[in-house]
Length: 117
Length: 114
Image (cartoon, rainbow over all chains, first blue to last red; front, top):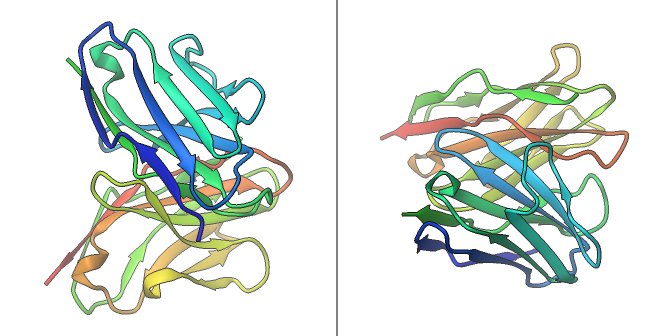
């Protein structure tokens, strides 16, 4: 089945630094990937839709200059949290559909636990 | 706008007993409905989906869900719970009519007690 690999699984960084999270589709091509953020005991919040070869589409309230998304190839999307602050500490999860069909389930990476000190 | 409600934050079930995790939804058109499971510090795993057809959908690990259009519900069920089923379960919905984002419920934590 479709596998999505996300790296790193955990990262601790100092306030003011930037962190890059990678999301790879291992056995399929993903023209679209989705980045979610999950707060403790809360649901997943869609941050942005990452489109291969074009700019990401950000959800309302998500700062595009803070959460930089690059989708340079059909198998790789990256999320960079710039100038991280403690309030950015969260669980970030990427996902992709196995094919272009709208009713296909999403396949998720294992997530990245970001802690900003 | 689409929305999903999972009315229970926590469901406790004894091992071997049947389990139900509730989900109701709201969409403007026909829904695509999904259930996902999340284990600690992991991403979500797909369990099952309803697109069209039979109202009873069977999925992974012995789970099933029943689509009820009149009640706008898509409850997740399993006849006999296992301790290993203990996890966080998310219901999700998308409107059938277009490429709208998948909207997730807030999740229900299932705890199966031996």
